[in-house]
Image: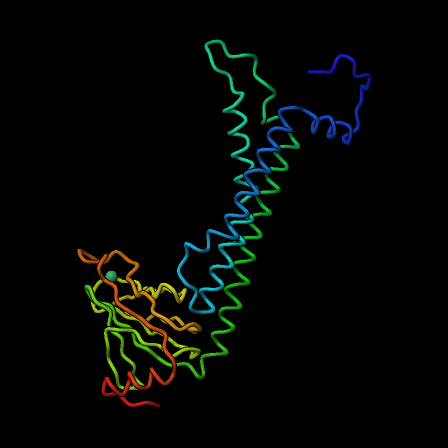
Length: 263
Ligand SMILES: [Cu+2]
């Protein structure tokens, strides 16, 4: 559709873009996009994380940071999609005879290129961020490993059991001293389970014949939940127990009370 009093026969890309931005439908869609994006950015940064478990380790902090950053990155994407939906909802055709169709998207080279480039860039950011985060978590684990405490975790239908080899203690509760790196060596006595101390931000499968290992460092005092995150039979949903991050003195007292020996 050409403007009947527009004299330009060969508008430059800049002129075409300015004209595009002045279109009523474009302006309204952009307005909605900004509105939705702002909403998601605020939700992602302020409220969303309040619904997440308490952060009790550096790993949990990394997970929360990742959730916030990914929410921010996806905010404009979601905002754009919702803005199109809102515009269509407000101005879309209702009635029997549809009007003439607009220009096809498949012939819009700029639109398709932009879509491809933006999607690729977003995917690339997600991959790079994930790799960097995994690497830094692995580096921290390697550094902490020499002075880590070992806890052998055994899953069975439908209880968790924790053995502290250095202390000579076995318990159904997971007690951990604060700021002490801990290595969980996880195995199952029967079917597959998944060891998930929620607030510590780590999770690993418990398999029958293969020990899996996961490491973290609790850095906040308090209770946490230990759950099974792999459907393992009738009482899977009840396969949970209590965990707590306590002071070193409290941990030693607990070990002594359990008949163990402190290092
Ligand atoms: Cu289970």
